[in-house]
Length: 195
Image (cartoon, helix red, strand yellow):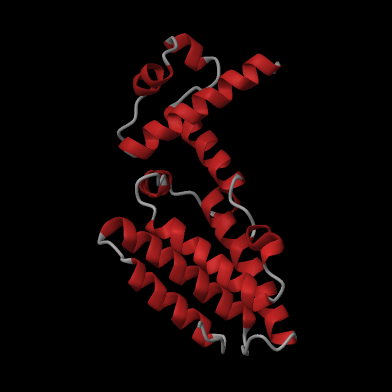
């Protein structure tokens, strides 16, 4: 694929993301994407055969943009405790950011397509996050920043708490104070206190 084709494909994915974000997964048609991109139907079908294929490209791009825990903290953090706090603070921003969220469309896509195992990109991302959290907790315990007897279980629980808050924020709503209480709880279970 040439540079122009790659640019066109990326343009379509970018426009489609906005359409899926606004309308969800199920309601979007190829006609909606054609209109949003201001291209011909044939032009769209050169790149994508269906809304599912297009949404999967959007989802792939979205998940590729998710930084790992260590990359998220960058050079701002030096200790495992600081890295954990930065990670949780970034999750808070993401959880409370309803306006630009693709999350409802992702849920519709997952419910409709019943993906399992390695075919489920969201599950794969979740598993990577759990693995990174586990390593971070192990480092925190080793360096005496955290207290934890089972880093794997703690990592899984933290990831489930974050996912639960993400769902709750989209369905019944969460305030910043609600999220702060959960972050304090997570930090407390690791023997850390937020000041």
